[in-house]
Length: 319
Image (cartoon, rainbow, N blue to C red):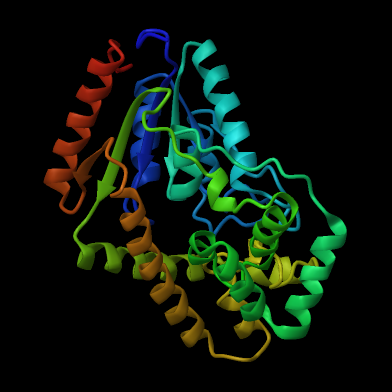
């Protein structure tokens, strides 16, 4: 397939709170674009504040996809994201519009940009139930240790509390004899006519933005959002409720810790998460990085990014 025939795709990545949403709205409006959320948490309905979804007025500026498509108790996976995003990229290109994937979930995004191959191993409810009983009886650490014995690469990527995904990895191994990591093959070159934009920021400035963002989330009603989810029967065992901002507030709502500690925990874990995001994204050679630390440099970076898109796709922005 020639370069001219490849589907166009713009990807905007970077750590949480770096400014991806605002830039994506600006670029998508100017370049006749549609935005595909590359965030593993924004798929859930009713989880708005903690996942930092764009405001309704912002969402109305350009078409958005893969936001509010699942209830918090429904399963979602990187394989489902890959399937949906790949289809959407084709549809958006067919509309002669420019698709933008925007987000901070590195595995999800790279699964699309470099066509990771995932296992299609059939589900085994009996095996899953047996593994769940093991986790209940011996603890999640014992289940995770079992995965580490057979697939250390996947075990290193998954947190012990992510029981559903740990069970899925063990299910794949026991059903096929292969490791989950064996199925996650990465294409050396992207199949897309691709521009990957990475946003970064001086660590001290980014961490201050993260701390402030968490405070603003609390002011906007994050505690009430989590309480409402618990009242609907969604609990800490669900993958969705393990998300940053939700997991930390549940002990507070159960009276186990103070609100101050919960806020501090969210801020600290979000800072650690941002560090992991940057580590993941810096592995990707195609990313063109732009520093968004100071306003003057930020404005210059935005203009450079616009020039890159205009040159790459031979189109002028809609001004």
